[in-house]
Each structure stands twice: as structure tokens, then as C-alpha cells.
Image 1 (tube, rainbow, N blue to C red):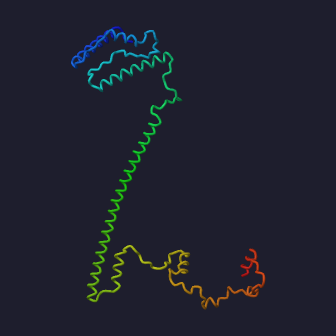
Image 2 (image 1 turned 180 degrees about the vertical axis):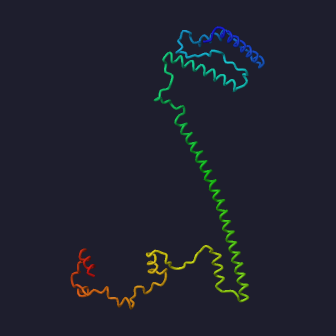
Image 3 (image 1 turned 135 degrees about the vertical axis):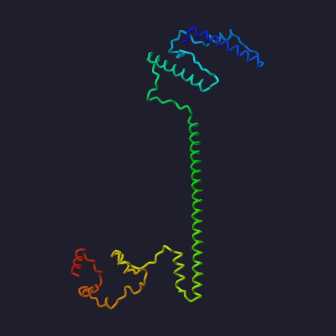
Amino acid sequence: MADEGDSEIEGESDEEELTLLAARGKKSGRPAINNKVALEQKLNEIKTPSSLPWVEMLAMTTAEPVNVPDIEDDLKREVAFYQASLEAVSQAIKRLDQHKIPHRRPDDYFAECVKTDEQIRKIKTKLLADKGRIERGEQNRKQREMAKYGKQVQLAKQQQRAKSKKENIDNITKWRKQNTSGRADPGELEDLIAAKSNPKKRKFSGPSDSKSPKNSAKNRKYGFGGPKRHQKSNTASSTSDMQSFKVKRQKQGPQSGKKGMRPGKSKRQKMRSNG
């Protein structure tokens, strides 16, 4: 608590402030009212009784007054206030511990949200809108870059086509000059154009011996799209081949009346083994 010397200093400073305010009122043209009796009366009405314990007031006073060298410097003034408040809080915590008054928030304490649900909903909507706007801007930027890259690829392709077209024209002109002298081959022109138009294309050279037996069998069977007519027609060798001829099967002949039943699995296996 402040002592009597401090109260005298504070009283003098209050009088100086009142004098300064009165001077400002005279400059502004407004009458300065300093009703000291009424002010003291109101002060006594709102003044806390000194008989109340400290726990009821929780008022703390710093040991030394706050001294700011330059009161116009906002940063230094706020730092001085912060240090004074920190000192007062540390003293108040010690006094609360002495009185065994809890001052820390329990772990299971949930404070009520300052903002209402409607405000939180508006903030969330705004954040989502900003996020969507940023994502759309990023997507549009990527699309512009892709369009720019696509234009570059298209230009490169057009240049390549123009280059190949020019080479083909030069080859045709060269072939014509050779043809006038009778030294040109008729098939040379097609080879030149095909080689220039498809430089990486490799002609198919037929079946290779390095392939697997399965692929070789399929190649022999299907023939790479060759002629498939008369593949199942009889030939002299197939006609003279009597391995598939069964005398027993021919002796049975067609059954009249009721259709013959299919033999069982064991009988069919025996028939295959005998055949």
C-alpha cells in the first residue's frame, strides 16, 4: 500500500493536472468547473472501505512509482506499464498462496466461447471462401501454364512438319533431276519419302527363330494374316492317314430308336487309353 509521502505526492500531481485542465478550458472557451466539494463527495461514495480484507479488493500497489523518462514515447511507456504489472502480479500470487486461494485454472475447466456460433459460422464461411478462391486461382494459373506449354509443343510439331515437308520436296526435286537423266530408280522415291516421314518405324521382318515355341506355333497356325482358305481341307497326306480310324466305332453303327447315353468318365478314359 502507498504510504503518506506517496499520497502527498499524488495529491500534488492531481492538483497540477486540475490546473492544467482549467488552463486548457480557458483556451478552448469553455468554463472550467472544479467543484472540489462535489468531487470529494463522489469519491467518498465510491471509495472502498478500508475495513474490508484484501481478499475482497485484490488491489495491488507497486513498491515504487512508475517512472517513464519520456512519456511521449509509446513503446517505453508500455514497457514500463508491463514491468509494473508483472511485479504486481507476482506479489499478488504470493499473497493468494498465503491465503490458500486457488488461482490456477483446473485441467477440466472449459471456458465459454467469447464469440457466438453465428459469428464462428460466418468466420468459417469466409475462410472456406478464401481457400476456394486461392485454389481456383492456383488452378487457373496451372491451366494457363499448361496452355502455354501446349502452344509450345504445337509450335514445335508444326516446325517439325514444315521441316519434314521441306525435306520431302527436296528429295522429290532431287529424284526428278536424276529421272531426267535416266539414272533414277522408280522405287527410290517411295523409299525416301517413307524413310523421311517415319524414320523410327521398322518394317516387319517376319517370324524370328528367337521367339518362344508358343509364339512360333501361333505364327505357323495363323500365318501373320496370310491366306486362310482351304486350311481344313483334306490333302493327300491327311487322306492316307488312318490313325484316327477306329474299326470298333464303325462296327457299332448308328443306334436306332432311343438316343445312346454318354459313357461315364472311367469308360471314356479307358476308351482313350485303348485308342
